[in-house]
Amino acid sequence: MKRKNFTLILNHFDDDYLGRDVFLVPYYIQKECGYNVTIVYPQTGSNQNLPGTYRGITLHPIKHGDNKSPHIYFLKVAAYLIKNAKKIDILMSLYILMKSGRIALLYKLLNPKGISFVKLDIPTYMVERVSAFFKDKGAKARFKKIFYRAYFKRVNLFCCESSDSLDLLLKDDLNPYFRDKTILFENGCDDDLIKELGITTKSFEEKENIFITVGRLGTYEKHTDLLLQGLKNIDFKDWKAYLVGPVKEEFKPYIDKFFKENPLLKEKIIFMGPIYDKKELWEFYNKAKVFILSSLTESSGLVLYEAKFFKNYIISTPVGAASNVIADGCGILTDMHDPQIMANILNEITAKEREINVYDNIDTLKLHWSSQVSSILKPALNKIINND
Image (cartoon, rainbow, N blue to C red; front, side):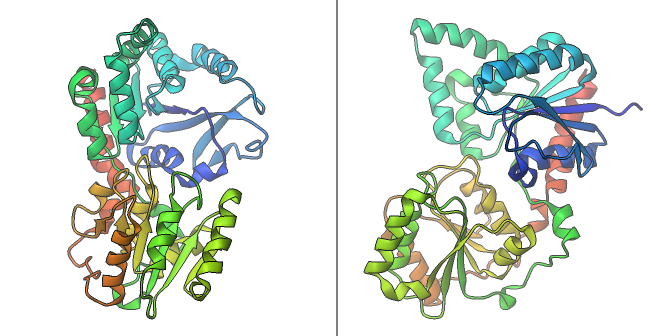
């Protein structure tokens, strides 16, 4: 049987994406489904040194340059699709908004028999915005809704990363467009790379008394001030907190002021900076007992899946897929505005009043991307292919 051609078209791509779901879903689709996979992306100054192939995936740049209009890039994508749409059996795009939607729509107009697959990566607040937009009776909204209805109707398969967002998509005005063709497809961990790097997950007894967080520290979304205020109010005992990731420049005065007011915490709260080496980063997860996510918003929260794979007890604000991730008892949700609630949980941990050795009956191998794709996404695509 002829191998199917699977293409993902992106509006942005750089080397950081090579370790994220943007790349890993196509990679594991190639591995589990046997498709020929190509990723098409705009070539700019920041990504011009990307290889032509990576881990067996063809990376196809479209010359674009920096600070150029996305509309110009779309015209270049349109030219690419006019030439290649008939050769593409499955086109993947990301997100719900117009920049990606017009790519999916054009593909289906050029190749009606092709399969349009959209990975939504959508937080609940964005679903609420789209739902409110569909309720808008204004003239501008009516015109846009013509496009969105055409786009939604032609997509063959949507996937959503959290139950909370999926439930909202299936309500009221949006239901006709997403019912019967939207699946829950959570994010995962790169099991091939974990195996290649020779990383073995540690038992609870081998771990250290470490709290860890990973992300872009000091950004509005990551809400790092909540984490610091929570840590300020705990009795660390023999525990330490490691904050991994780049620190936003505007947040550095806040950190300086925090340590000036709490000088004794300098030995307990350590800013590690970014760790780009995957083995080093994952070994940090591996030796930690507790992972903390203090975000105000997340699309799904990829770090939560890595934390769970490495058997961290998870403390998270109610964002992204946090509720799904901890549904089996591997963590707890905390308030996103009151640091004392987080502090109370952390104090229970350092005082050994909260059980955090919770993974005995949890199968973390289900978090492998290979498992996610083979058990959820592959059957959904095969169902569409066989019906056609």
